[in-house]
Amino acid sequence: MTVITEPQFIVRLDGRLDVESAEQLAAAAAEWEVAAGRVAILDLGWLEYLSSSGIRALITVAKTLQAKGARLELAGAQGMVKRVLDVCGISQVVTVHEYVEDAVAAAERGAGS
Image (cartoon, rainbow, N blue to C red; front, side, top):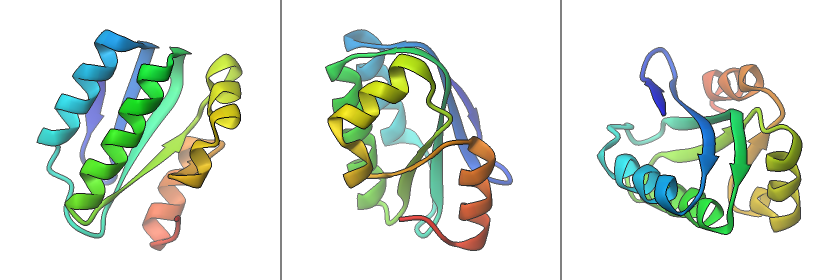
């Protein structure tokens, strides 16, 4: 997990988001300093595997940020990860962008969910 905080708050996930890494993501998100009104973008472009525990972690992260007045947006999912996100309907909970650049542009415009 790589965290970039400026100019936009972007977290790049890579490898697998499974039981073990999902717990780590949820714990890390509780520590993220994302100001109210800001967007945290999860870059899923390097993620190769997403389990049901990973999906739960994404929802947990979204709720954690919402409690801080911020919001989560997902971007860059490909292949199996994109299919899993589509099937589980995560776009009903968080905004999903095809590309990270789109998520950044939306955050800069104050657009999104």
